[in-house]
Length: 356
Image (tube, rainbow, N blue to C red):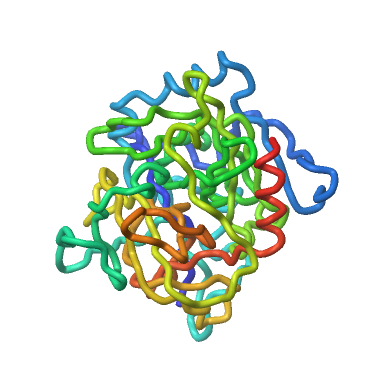
C-alpha cells in the first residue's frame, strides 16, 4: 500500500500555465510559528489569521460564488509541486515509509482518481453501513458540517469541517493539512461555510478564521497521527457560529473500534462538492502499521478532508460525538479512509482553541 494523504480540492490553474509551484516557488510572507498556550507550548502551534474586522471582510469578499464553484480536485497539484513542504514532500522524497511490500513512498495529496462504476443512489433513510451516500435526512449534522475554502501559495483549495461545542462558541475542527501544509506554510483566506448547498448557497453565512492551531508533530514533520487542525472563527453579523448552526460534541481517548458515521463534501468524481455525503461502518486499526489511525470503509474523494467522524451518532437528530476526521487513504486501497485518533494531544489542541 502506498499512502495517499490530503483529500483536498484546488482551483483551476491559469490558462496556458501550470502555475507557481505550490510550495516550491517564492512563498508568501507568513507569521512565524509561535507557542499558543504556555502549558502546552511544546505541542500546540498557533497562527493568527484575520486579526481585524477589515481583514475578515477582505477574506469573506475574496470568496465569490464564482471562486467557490471553480474549485477542482487537488490531484492536479502533483503537476505543480517541486519540493518544499508536505504537499510535495509526500511523494516519497522525504523518506517516509511506504506500506509493507510496496516500493516507493507516499504519493502526492489528491492523486486519487476514484471512479466507482456506479453513482451513489440517494438513500431513503440513513444506512448504518455505506461507503458513500448523499445525506438527505437533515438534522444538526446538515448545519454543523460545512465546506472550508482557503488559499495556499496563491492556489485555492476546498476541505470539509464541523463546528464543535466550545467555550468561545467559535471552534471548528478539520484536518491539519486543511490549515497548515505540514512543515510548510499556513493557509490564507480561510473561510468556513456551514451547511453549504448547491451552487454556492450559504444558508447560514460564512465565517473567516481569526486564529488557527495545529499540533506540534504536524507542524514539525507532517505526522499523519496528528493531522488535526482547529480554528477559532470570527463572528458573523455579531453572532458566533455555534449560536447560528449549533455544534457537535467532541471526545478524546475513547475506546478504539465501534460504529462511526463520517461526513464531508467530496468534490472529485463521482461527487461534485455540492452535497453533504456520509459513510458509515465499523472502525478498524491501520492494518499496515503505518499509523495509529483507524480506518472506515468510505470512497469519498478529494474535498472531504477534515470532515467529522462521529460515534454515538443519532441519525434522527443528526447529533453525535466527534472522535476523528477524514485524513488520508492508501493509494491502492481507495475504499478505506483513515482518520487520526483523538488522544491527549488533540485534547490539548481543543482546550487551547476553545479559549482563543
